Length: 505
Image (cartoon, rainbow, N blue to C red):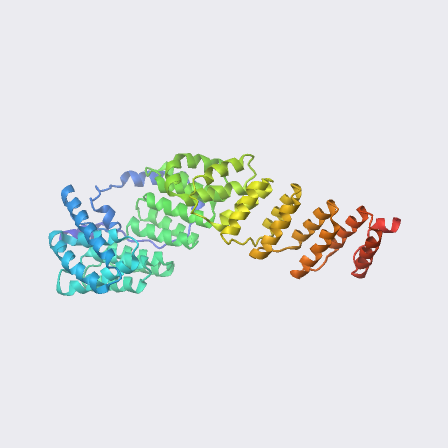
């Protein structure tokens, strides 16, 4: 053990203070591209442990087992998980099952891999995870002590569950037992990252740098880059990336993905692409997550050509597992002026399950079909919105709907829509009623036109200059001279401009 500590100390590099360099100029430098290749070429990646998917951020993974041992452990833990899920609401039952089943696994599988495997298999069951972690802490006092990887995984999971206090308690507990490692620091930083606590995350990072027994790794910097990117702290994110090169630490695919994700979040499309090109010039190769991030970025930025090119690279994965990205692409087409955008949107809509309803996407489609004068499709989307209780509150969308009814000369449909919109709490604007009045007057249905004034009054919409002009032209066209004079009197009374034709006649 002493020899290990000596080797660790010998490899330690004194960290330089973070300086804020503009990453865009950094990315454009050919010298930095060269450094990227050199750093990656010099990096020696150790053969991954068979338990690497389990331990994640751990710096000291457990000794590997053969395939049969892994299979047996997985099977036994799966049975234990199912038993725990069955009695998840019974705290005493959970403790009893753990005592009867987990203790024997501790003796058979060393270094805590059985407990870590259980935490992994419990997935997103937060309350049950916290129950299991608290039981493990208590049982370790009189039984098998908790190991480094158990503390590391527990710290991270407690943070994911939103229990920061428990993460800090576990970290302090590990430190008091001499089990504090780079991995436990990374786990605590991850806990702060999950909860958007950038300052505490960076403070923990500085504590690690002052700790003579621990050395920051690329995982450490990846966490910093990720938390800063999520919170749009781009300068601090870029500073962390610059420090990686100052310390001769080779970035990995998570580093680049976290940078790209930060720029996508900040809508900084140029830097997103520069980072992607920098990745392509290095020995690190893009993975599926990289292309998914780029696809999202291109969709949000409206770069349809590159969005479609990237989509072809990951089409099967997106269609099966990334419905949210399909919706992003639909929105990109909705915002565009591409000639065949509706056909492409229709094809993408077929990939979204019917039960996966999103109100905002429904409104996007209403506006799209309205802009294209696709009356039937627009009304189908409007009916879907009514069925799901979705209210349209955008004045712009309402005007698009009204204009479509007008251009399609669908008076009765417009009248029916207005009644339903009134009852459903949609945005009620004066344009709705003015459009009805114009269409009634064009059909010489003057009584229906006049009834619209009462409808406006029900929603406290005053008569404006445009209201009187619509009525004036309608009466004039139908030869209703007395009503024309009445409207002119009302216009004069309200101080509105009198049509020149009224004086000529």
